[in-house]
Length: 356
Image (cartoon, rainbow, N blue to C red; front, side):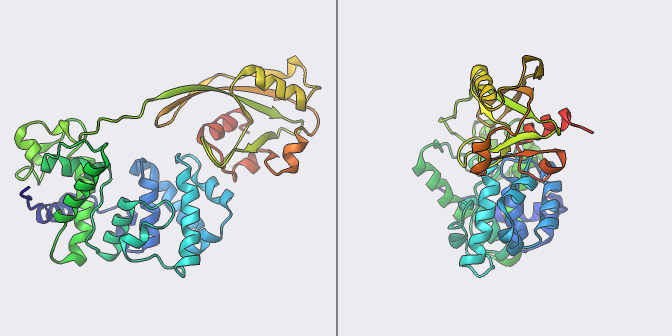
């Protein structure tokens, strides 16, 4: 394959038309760049901005993040979704402190050994912070490069993905890497986010239009090719909102695997009957008049729809003693759950029910 020369036009376009105002673009501190890269995975820039600054206020460096309790990290992350990112963020900070003396490694190959850092994120950190000549292949960059190259091999096949990585490496700048690599990497991201969009790309204003084979063929929306798609699923969850005489809600830590892993939430059941049995077992004095069925609502995850059915129960007594003994659960009022790691829909539900 004959390679188009794209590095120079991407670097020039990024300098004049790309995004250069974001706070993590004003630094080469690997801690701040890493934090932004993890937050930006499957999350919009506008959402990340507030979370990014709050994290830096609470944890200004990798050592303070590593020393923080996981609950404090999850509480600050609440609302960003994909909570495995927060747990890996915490584990990664601890690994940097314990295994790398508190300084992020400078090579992408070493960065990729840290928890939660894949090849593309490692490439971004190494490129932005250390000007290493390494590619990235996030969704935006993958789309740009497959269109420029008219790369029509199915990326659901591992060997095709590896081939695209090899091609991406060859397309990287070869001169003035100190300045060119950060701009090139950011430029490809910016092109994918603003010009080379999944639908109706703005080919006429794209700096790579002369080199782009998909634009020449008139079919950019055919790229990238990926035949294997994850199927959506749907399930119903019943949430037991047990409220004691002091207005506190019983919350339990979720298992470390699965949806809402490691976060606090009301007890969850797959059937209304199971919820009723659990409530009767723990709070036998609760009367039918003490039960209120709250409006059901839908919580949409990436590949799953959760139909949530909250049931509020006014209870008497201390409740699930066994859960208290093993530390999985606690009674929490609004002041307490403000500092706890709660799933966004649970926090919204509780705030609405107990506002003021």
